[in-house]
Length: 177
Image 1: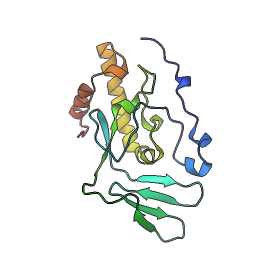
Image 2: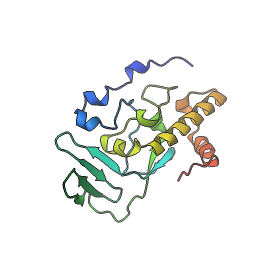
Image 3: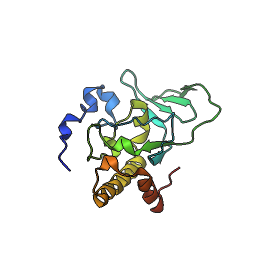
């Protein structure tokens, strides 16, 4: 099946791209095939569901911004009242969850490498929601199951049948939409 040179795919550690204040809870991640996007929540190859609010750490001021799926945003700073506003215009349909697609676990150019947990890459907003432990657990279970499917089927992890992966995950108790 060949060997993949992971060193060509690893991005600079987050602290090389952001200030130290912004790196709290963020670490090195790999480049992925498709971004995780909480505005477009459903994927045919979705392997994890998330509802965690997005938390944004600021480099230019104290405090955090919390972004919710319904579009609200709260800015919370020590010793200050909470500032609430709309993070995006109101929508007729409000997403109640987002999904992480399987393809976000397979780095670009890698046919047989999987990443999970905090290694998957996403834009800053999405990463602020998916880096929590429940999503790390879900992506880890999906990566392990996908590795078994690839081994059992004699194929690369990038080429597995994602419908079969979703079926196995669902049968083991994962709630997939």
